[in-house]
Image (tube, rainbow over all chains, first blue to last red; front, top):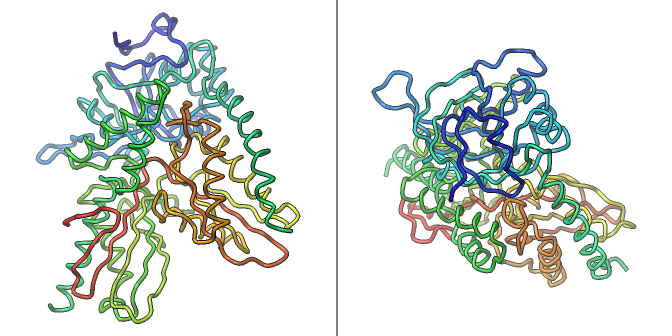
Length: 204
Length: 299
């Protein structure tokens, strides 16, 4: 059976979710990336959307104006961007906003692990590059804030249905699948390099 | 055909091709992804490959960009000295990107540096970014269109090594990048490596390497052998799709090389993500065309 989270998300909802699990989301998710993080944390500007118990998506979509309607947008293509760019802000971001679910691409670091553990939140990966798949999970764009940032960086408030697959990469205990994998990857890399060195002695 | 009509036609065709590149992967990449998917054994990796296949089908059916990051457009232009529209080509290419941005549509990905303003058109100071080459005594135009997304541009790195560090240093640069930035850059990757005399030429060749088809080889047998050895070595790390582990890591490694100064060996790496949106199209002087990456395409 599909494990589906619904916003608003409670601490209790995240209790049994572990790294490597695959989950889906019903409710709302807001796109939020580089400049929005910087504005909240460094420039102390209040986020114009309430995301307490909510979800953010490290993503910059392609949206299209709905013809014949005032101020209405359609989601064309939306996929995750590299989450690591938000690493330096994410712990404080979680603390200040009360966000419970962060969706992005690739791993995040120790800062986010601590933020997730202390405030009970999780980070998930949506398979990147699968932007039409994600767009078809968006039922409606309900709001758009900080539009001065341009299409990729605007906060697009999306109502989603069975948005996923979301692969849990940091759980609410602060376990981090990418960091665990990295240890193994680096061991294998060192072994691979030892094998390569004798084969590349072209300068003699 | 009047000159203005011809230029409008050429601009329109290139705009359509740019749009297509964002919606359909080149034939060589599609074939390689199928092969990797079929050879994958780990359940999580298999699920991700299935999502990728589903996405590419949906993009085709709904006529939408398959990845939202349609990149800052880069083009490698090889223009024949006798191509009739050579003098107007630069504005034609800029206009084509402008039109494709509205029609495809493409995401707005051109931010003017220092002013830090998104132009909203994908056109700006040296955007699209163009590399030029001329073909003597030819009346054709060959164009590689590449969508350089943020995720795959981020890992780009280069280093100028001392000869004492040798090619051992080169392979270390490549492999270190795989486990640091590479795993977040949407594997399975196409790894472009440039080896030459200075950082700028190495970086250029590393990007040029990404324009070569997946599975192709360098004409120098030693370099070709190193392409295979690097592929095997990176695969042994088992990054898998999305860097979440898998049987393999890459679609391949392409090396482009040049002669070097005796005192230095420069190397650079540019990465292509699994959604490697590259297209090559050749226009004849009558503006009939053919694409080697998107066979049978009709614009």
